[in-house]
Each structure stands twice: as structure tokens, then as C-alpha cells.
Amino acid sequence: MVVNSYDKLSHMITYSKANLSEIVVSYVKSKILTGELKSGDRLVETDMSEELQISRAPIREALRELHMRGILSFSPKKGSQILEMSYEDIAEVFSIRIPLEMQILTIIFEKSMLQEQDLDYLETLNDDMIKPDHDGTIEDREKTFVLNTNDLAFHEFFWKKSGSFRRAEILENQYFQLLIAMNKDISTLGSQKEKYDEHKAIIEACRTGSLEKTLSAFQAHMDSYLKVITKL
Image (tube, rainbow, N blue to C red; front, side):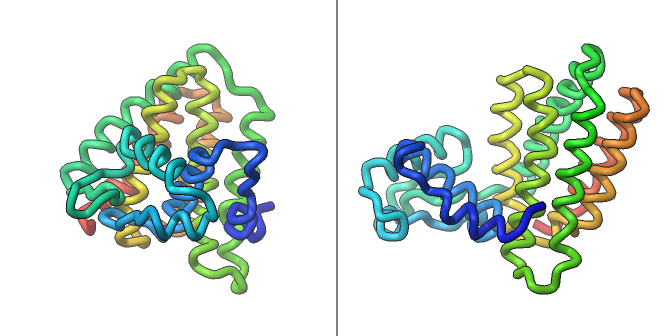
């Protein structure tokens, strides 16, 4: 069960277990997952140094890594900022993501890699995603974080299960690119219930053992995003 997950993540910084630049990367990603960072937002090194209580050297290293991943851009006038994406950029990312993720599903089915416990795990992730929808005490930032972290974990399961690590790396970077664009209008993410139903359809299709049904359910999931990106 996911409870107060954003608060937990905020206190997960453990200097003995991760180098400082990795902490900064996780910090930026968590801000994207909560919807706090969106396209065009500036990242100020001094502010991050003060908030994280670390020097600026690892922050610069982390910003370089995020730039290489296509999550940040840099200009002499504006410094580091979250990548700004046009409608055409977003559409292009979807045009790359969808075939790659379909390839991953095809690999998984052709090699019969899914076990019953895998599908039970996906059901648990899906159940966790919808729980905050029934809790009036959870603030919107927390709900957004739970929605996005469980959505990422759901898709990431398939990426890693396939063993196609190059595809997985590309898809993770593209996931965050899409998320920072959609954070401009959180409604484009859809509700917990909508995403729950779409993920449920994918799980049920997987249980049938039919690749065709699974690809169809996945395409329907992506179509729900494609219908709303014109708002961005």
C-alpha cells in the first residue's frame, strides 16, 4: 500500500548509500513525478544546494547527466531548465515510444516470459495507484506522485522483464520527457480511475496469453494520451 509516498521519498536521501549526483538526479525526478517541475522551469544551482545541503559540484554533474538524458536543456541566458517541448516534439516522442514498447511486449510473449506472480504484482501496483482516489486527506501533489510512480513502475516492469536494457533506457528517458510536458496541464495525465481501468485491461489481456489482445489494450492506453496532447 502506498501511503505518504512523497513524504517518504523526500526523506530517502542517504549519503552513505548513493553518491551525491545520484541524489540530485533522484531529487529532480521526484519533482517531475509530483508535477512540481514542468517544461521551461529553471533549476537554480544555489537553491538546490541550499535545499539538499550539498555543494554545487555534484549538482552540476547531475545536471549534465539530466541534459544527456534529454530531460534538461541549457542556454547561457537561462541556465539549466526543464526541456521545453512543442506539440510536434510530444507527438514525435509518442511515435518512438509506442513501437518500442510494443516490441518489448512482443519479446515477452514470444519467449513466454510472463508468470502468474508477475501479473499478480502488476495487479498490486494497479491497486496501489487508485487508493489515494478514495482518500480525501491526501493532497493533490501526493496523488499526482502516486499516479506517476505507479504508472512508471507498471510500464518499467515490462521494459525490464524483456531483458532489452537499451530499449528500457530509451523508454525511461522518454517517459520523463512526456511527463514534464504533460505537467503543464495535469488533467492530461488522466485520473487514477482512468489509468487503473486502462492498466487493468492490459493485465487482463496478458492473462489470456494473446499478444494481439495485449497490444490492442496497450494501444488503447496510449490513445487516451494522444487524444489530449493537443491541449498542451
